[in-house]
Length: 229
Image (cartoon, rainbow, N blue to C red; front, side, top):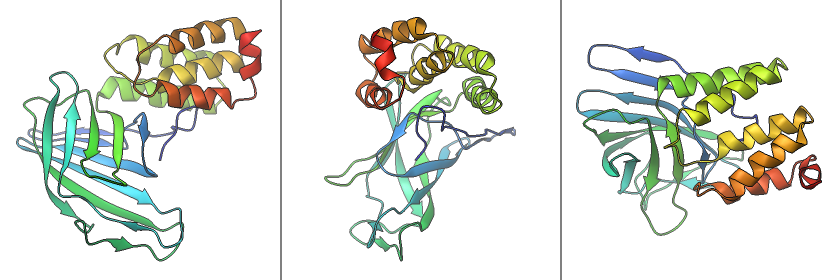
């Protein structure tokens, strides 16, 4: 699972053909399980999503429920899975041999009329259901985020901050907070605690879906106590 706060180091490749678009390693806000999205591919009528789950426990098992769907935000529409490859359908399960083992699988969905900018992947079941929230499919947004993490790795905090702010400003409809968590952290690393506190107050007053999760992560950072000074 990719996490916010400067650990979302991903790279995106957009390969556009006449009737196909492929997004490699899209960024996303959070996941309920240690899952990464390897690829999302759109054709004229279908959507293919490749994922990998990383087993963390002894005796781990995993399966795909019969009802899995993609939820896009603009029109609140769903695309349902019609086929799963590389993973058993519940109640049958894949039994991991040991912690650390990974399982890659692919889901095929019905399509949308237009390619959305971002979506959720939701397994609709009663317990231990997996979901991946805020998967970003917009080329520029992914590009800005990836560049931001690249600049952070090279210790260029000003450029990283600018790109995270650009991604947040240009995508006001993205209902997740992880971009703001990274903005707060970079301001704190720059020792601009006043700005970091201002962004934290904005986050506290927001309606982002993952607000509590991001604020919990911020509260565990070494700089957190300085934001209330």
